[in-house]
Length: 306
Image (cartoon, rainbow, N blue to C red; front, top):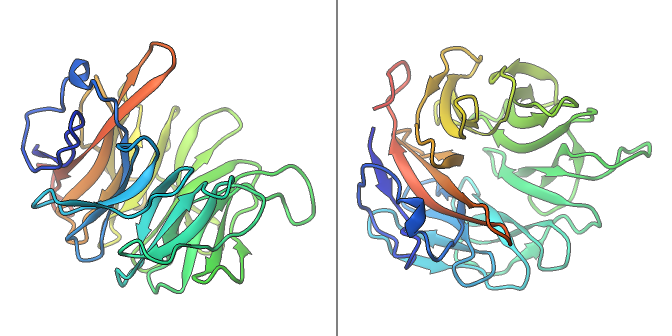
């Protein structure tokens, strides 16, 4: 197993070293949170969210050189970036208007536009492979009335034509689109408190429970060939990354670090790497978290992780 460090927290000096394990929690004195990495379609950049300047904004880093650029600088949190398939735009979640909404901007940070424009929480945007629509999670209430509940929706890339995908009593968040756009993976929270990684069809109908495990499973991401999913699971005691075939078979543990929680994986376009955030939690009050972004090499379909 090989890890390449993308973000060194104390100075936020982005580099490509290869430590044997993540930085010792005791040394994370700055307690910066770098999270939600997303590879650009050409694999040359990674967008991510960071509070390195005190407020969460979106940055882009070149993994090979460590050169980074800040794309947003607005009051309120900006995060959860997702590149459009052509690499020209980035969708993201922002609270700059006082409520969590879906925005889109140019890949250079220009012309941010609020797409969702409503009073309810919208978050976790991802693009359909053709770039025509964006799938996201929202707390909008059922169309016939009732209590708000997180479900999956889609909208045109200009914010019009909002359509509900799921309407279940459970919570669905963190959608991920298969490369051909025919399936949606997501995190589902059951009434029991169990989290599962579900695969749905485009109409929101269940196809497979790919985690199928009591406990917390979430943050799915598809391999570029659509054959596998990577997700975070606490089945080993701490949150680690697991890879599973798209039908839920052949689960394989990818990371093992009991001192940290690995979350929010994103597969590189060539299928050879997975970027993810690795968290350390500090128990003193007020509660703190810190995370850095790492990447791990992965093997091809049918091969064990390296």
